[in-house]
Amino acid sequence: MKKTGEPVSEKKTAVSAAEIKKRRKQFLIMLLSFILTFNCMYFTCFAENIDFGGYSNPGSDSEGGFRINNNINKAVSPGETIKWDCYNSGTTTYVYDVVYKSPGGAELFTDNKSANSEPGSGFLITYTVLGEAETGLAAGSLKHWKLVDVKYTSNKSITKIYLEAVLYDFTITWKNYDGSVLGTTQVGPGTVPVWGGANPSRGASAQYTYSF
Image 1 (cartoon, rainbow, N blue to C red):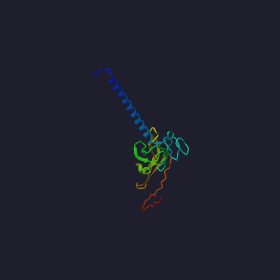
Image 2: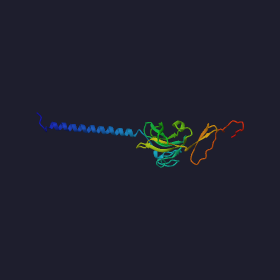
Image 3: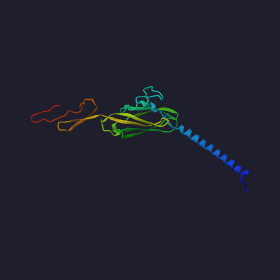
Image 4: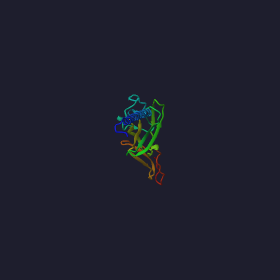
């Protein structure tokens, strides 16, 4: 019969502790390997240097660049380009969204984009801003977009760019003598509307003829 405190029990305890130590070491090695692999497979983008006008070097305001935190509400027109720098640390595909919003903040359209580059290389993202037709706005209603927010991860990989519509303030409706609509014009405050379409017309009566 074995007695409490016999050497054989102490030997079993010693072996068990060694096994636990070994497994802990294996787990730590696996965890470290995972962390290193993850950190070598992402894109780093520079939200603080997003540039609407031209190329911007990371960490610098040179070549027309500007810091995003100081440029919220910047105006951008359809067809203009938004540009920012990225660095590819691995092999993953860089994915980002450009979200277009109405003046009230409701989402109009989300443009899902992706880009690829060689691992270990820097590259420039160039995005062309969309217009009314692509985003669901009425023709002739958009004055410009404004940048309202940029979301990015802890490693500064941009995930979302938010653009909000700024619409013209007034709609002028041009009508013929009989009430038929000749066309409309959108103008801002302090702007004198000018009709640039076809001249109105009216047929002659027994007493009068009309010219415009």
